[in-house]
Length: 211
Length: 307
Ligand SMILES: Nc1ncnc2c1ncn2[C@@H]1O[C@H](COP(=O)(O)OP(=O)(O)O)[C@@H](O)[C@H]1O
Ligand SMILES: [Mg+2]
Image 1: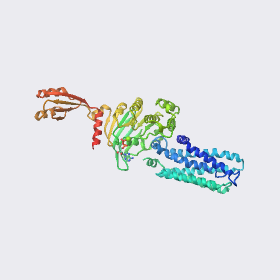
Image 2: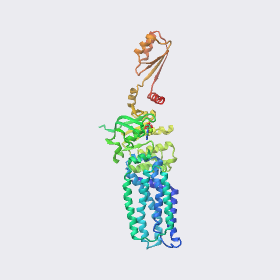
Image 3: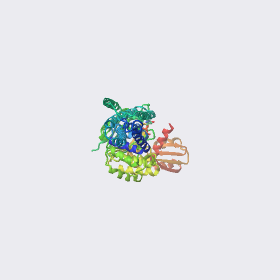
Image 4: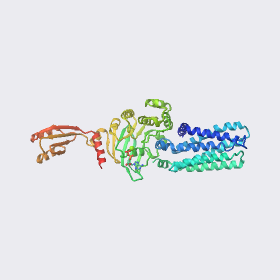
């Protein structure tokens, strides 16, 4: 599994255009908020979600299509890696990469804002990873079941644009603790349910994708 | 103790579209054997390799590797195999070095081997290049290099020498010959006898999913009745009683006007000539031609193409 995470991360690093776009957009969204009229000096609580979800939308097509593009799935399946290693490795790679960028771009803002942003930190450390993983699992299942991946690319684009627009219109600066708990609980349940669904992806299904 | 590495027991494979790619294949390969599977395009070579690596399930019969069913090999067993598929298993958007490193990680191989391997396969100077920018020969060398990075006990390669320019092909053949020297078990496929002849000690010839010959090159020659052929041109037509007599005494393949075609490894040309002269037939010319395995193989291919 570590080998897969390593390989996908190397591939991301070579995707310079995507990488730079992601970093610039993330920085823009996080830094612009405190300067918007009426929100001076605030840190939008959903800011950290944006880079993570955006990163996942950008890099999921990369990880879930590499094997098709390089025609390497057969070699992976014949190697000592299990199907679970391959799938979790790919999901893990997208997650770790997108989340690292989120941490790198959000932390400076949180630091500048100083104390009193406990909610912001909780969103960054708890809600963002939970919902990020939900999105990755959805992509993973979709790529394993839908024959035409172009559909997914458009879907990813719409999700991304949707997120950005919501972000811009909504400078949430405080969140009810109950809502916070409900949001995260739903996320955890979804992660579990989707994980069970992912267990249905086996060698036969993957081979049907390559043939 | 000599033990079985590969065992195909009565294996047939029919694809969902109805194509019968393999028909009742029975083969076992022992430790240390260097086996070449040769056959024309579409003969069933890739299907055999995929069955061996558990990428396909046999429609009937059993495929075993070290006694384990190939479709459900344990990860531990898979680590002892080095393979090269028709699709080479290289990531186009990673560099040469990254590709080898990745496969080294997959097999828990010593990462210090990577540098040694790249140098050994003459790819060190290209290590920072993306695979998509490599020539075919380099890609093939890289694909083979990464397949053996973990020093496997058993090597399976699907057409390792195909689609290469003559120089790269020679290099690849020499490198594979190097492996064959050790006590590893090797299974290669090719549609070209030339390469197999140079690398392998045992050859299995497959045609339309059926094995038509199996053995050492010598045994193959015998099984396919390879030998010499002698053409005797005489001064007059051979007819009637004389024609019958010759046919009875010697392994005659054909008598056509003034030409007699004799086949078989042990035909005594001198004796035939003596016999002809005794019967008042002047011999004008005797030509001897050695039939190679290549000739027979090409004849088989031609037959298949004519059908
Ligand atoms: N996925 C497939 N579906 C249907 N038929 C196939 C498939 N793969 C191979 N075949 C058929 O099976 C036969 C053997 O193919 P293959 O094993 O690839 O031969 P070779 O590798 O010797 O060229 C061919 O007739 C080929 O058309
Ligand atoms: Mg083939």
